[in-house]
Image (cartoon, rainbow, N blue to C red; front, side, top):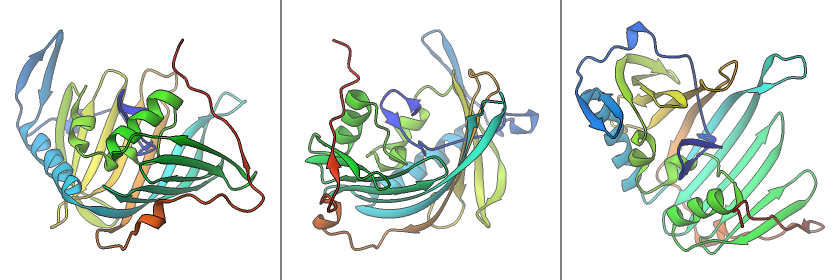
Length: 261
């Protein structure tokens, strides 16, 4: 699922919420022409989002837990809410690993920046593909070549800010609000296809605590909400942690490229 732009996927593949209301007016504002678009990003919102990105980019490694609520279509015509839990571990030179447990599916992901593996633990089926040797390139390759969006990928890139701000047409500082029980800077952004909000911890570590996205061009405007917790920047993540070993009795399958001939 592509969230912010072509090269930035998440669950944050991630995220999502209600359209911006009147209370989302920025405390400060500036504008600049960008092609045929006029961009209005409040400087305060921009600074806080950039600070969060710099904090994550400076971390050699981190772990985070996410609880996601996602609207899914039901045969009745109603949007129904489905839940999933994700645990993600990132080491910028060793790899990325994720575990997802949810109402609709369970998945395990590994990449040591040489290969990437995706396992369905319920069926025992797995796929293994080669990837480029950097984290950014590996994540881009998976989404562009196979349509595979790594859970919470937006946070793992070397420049999360670029992936989030690119395409934003309006950015607002909403206020100091609580998320996950802690005071956070609440920011709201609008893009052509989505409206999204992010709550960034106002304490000494400016980590995201909550993200929401509204897919406003889809009928019914489905939403995703992701709550982020248990941030750990001191975890021991050796190389072997990111290496995939096929479980006994599992079966390898092939996944095809989504690239057009």
